[in-house]
Image (cartoon, rainbow, N blue to C red; front, side, top):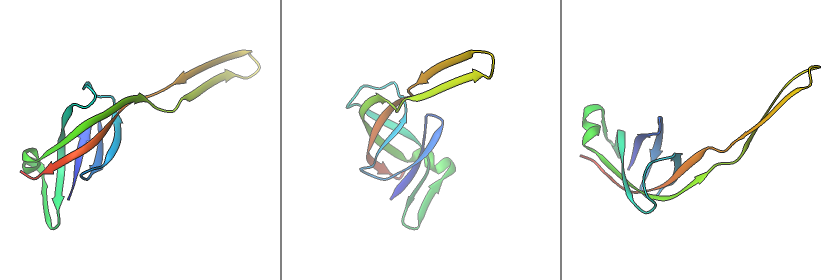
Length: 102
């Protein structure tokens, strides 16, 4: 059994017990989160569209963190113009607890 869920502007294929990282969510650690289902499948039975709104995917927030640092360096040749910048994308790590077909 698997489901395609939508969170943070992206879609993820999830199964029960899967731990995955998504965009930062406004939820406490160890709290339950219900994810929006786009498609759910169990063997030959596939549920999508309006029927997928009845399906539920429950996940637990494992942790919040920041991703690997990305270094940005821009310059203009022969002008002595240099600019350095860094970025670390925040994320939420989720563990899928259950997938229920509606």
